[in-house]
Image (tube, rainbow, N blue to C red):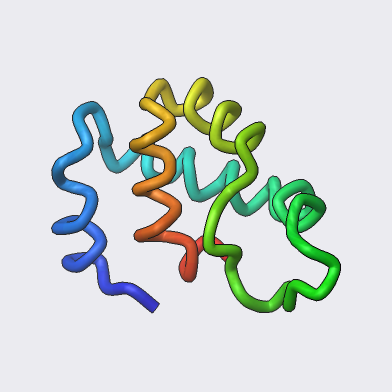
Amino acid sequence: MITLKCASDCLASIPGLSLEVTFVFASLATSLKDNIILMQPATYHICKPPLFLPPSIVAFLSAACKLSPASMKMCWDVLKSSVW
């Protein structure tokens, strides 16, 4: 699991990313777990966070959080083990 300091350092370069937006991202991504799993290969082990988010999930999170798709991908890379 990632520490708060490490997450903060990794996400500091994202313009517009506040603590509130981070919580929205985490809450929505957790709620979308089943939808995220649907886009993974059948052999995928569901206990591990996927390496990537499906494009439709990235687009939804990007719109909901008002951040770029690249920012959403970075958030996922940093927070996926905590969100999952």
